[in-house]
Length: 268
Image (cartoon, rainbow, N blue to C red; front, top):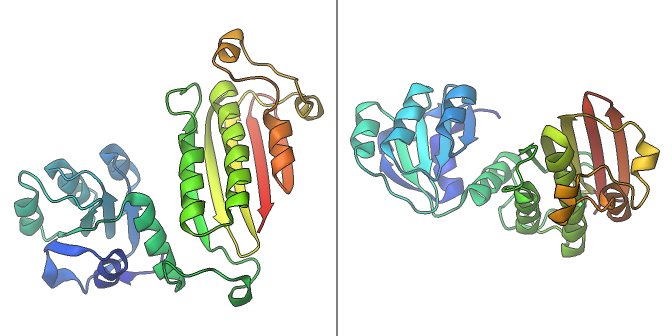
């Protein structure tokens, strides 16, 4: 994203300053949202602000090690243990907002695009192909304990930005079917959600064994699921057909031994 003053971040998130009020005019280049400090250290970029629900000193130290400029504690959390002193000693801005991670990200994205957080997004006021919202998610294969969490997050995001409930339902069902296919048959997948004034698009790009015969896989009742997966209520061979039924446009491409890409489009 383009550089933005910390004061603008504070305003967008309706945040209170815990420490570092004298640094609000500092420009930041990136905003990173995560509760996984190992990810912050691995993927975070310098001159960033961290959004996190972890109100621990380790979160503040992790931000400092990654050369972040500030930390925003989510869900109204306040600093614990030595966080305040550490932030003060190392010139980090420390703030708190009542927003959760999704709401905070949506607010900041709206601020970036000049959209009021609670306003309706009208196709009349935006170019047809302009991306109003873009988010990435990740799915791990064989992780049945978290299966459906990405679909749930996407459903929540779309509801919060005011997408028609009927469209949200179709997107949620299709994404959930695609997510379960990844959990059952792939190693991992990246999910990309994008919203324009005319459509919602979800792309699921997985690494896995691929689909040998896409036409056969599109037939209702065709399944390569194991008995164990069937016993859990999955693998009835309705995944891709159900996605096709709900999406306005579905493109499936696959390479055996590499993986599969689903592109699902829903007209607004």
